[in-house]
Length: 368
Ligand SMILES: Cc1ncc(COP(=O)(O)O)c(C=O)c1O
Image 1 (cartoon, rainbow, N blue to C red):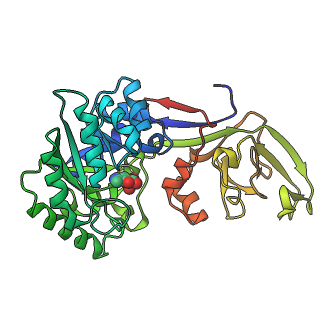
Image 2: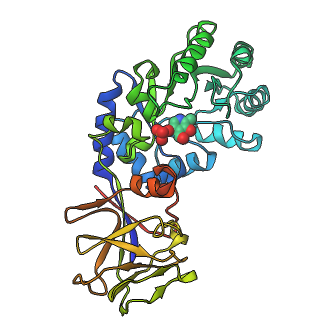
Image 3: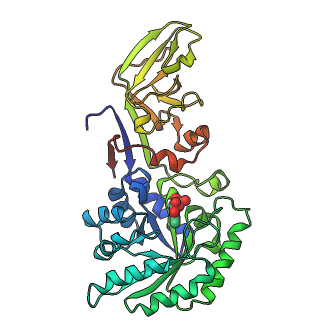
């Protein structure tokens, strides 16, 4: 790895977080959500670390994500969290992924794909929309879909699931509304082996949401799902740090302005360090203008002016800095720390979007 910008991914922290989460949600199983390249952390290494630490299975959003895991030799259960396009269903069966279904058309198409393989049956999870209004069957349609699955002769109803809209707001009453709607569906669908509703926040904050398994993503990566549940995430360790080396240093005089639009003017003479990482790597253009900083020589140094596509500039003042020195955009240096949550708060978003946004152009270094 030669690029002077990279992300370090601490797989020991993944293992630690799996342990913390397993203890928190037991006796429910912990399933590791590794979609979107494990929220930018690298799906295959994270999946292996999570399974080794006791995760019972993996969750992905797309067939292609399941394909990547299987191609790496991972044979653990892999649950697809939503329906896949009809022309991917044969591959879903071929790869042995666990399909989620909620539309009659998909059940029929999946059954046809399975029927092409004589003697084969496939366990499926039925997703019920209890209030998220994203994907899932209406509760009233669930019994009919269950019957359709059973009567296909080749599909087995293995699980019933839903997804919570406000699990990260523990005082919000809507989580209970959703769980009651799930229970009403379950009362008309006896003998379901597996029931699941909780994401990270659901598993940590709502005992009643844990059911047979918890689908944890963000907490696995050591980030809190939201500030109202921060107190439940204190034992988690951040997994990803984002680093770059100083590629150029220059003195600038008071009154000098910097970067596109000349949006920042220096009030005093100072030293500017350039880092070879920019918005094409996932550092948002407005991070500096929103108060964002970088750790250099163990100190917080403000990002000055707008972040450009491939580079950003930092005011390092009179600190002893040389070209080639390591700067930390997310992570720890000395006693200081910058988190993805801090970026998210500054940018008016959530930490999910920060780590998912670190582009494939940034090399990942995995350490155990
Ligand atoms: C259906 C489903 N379950 C679980 C998760 C994991 O959520 P979290 O990262 O908040 O744990 C997601 C992520 O968006 C999801 O879409």
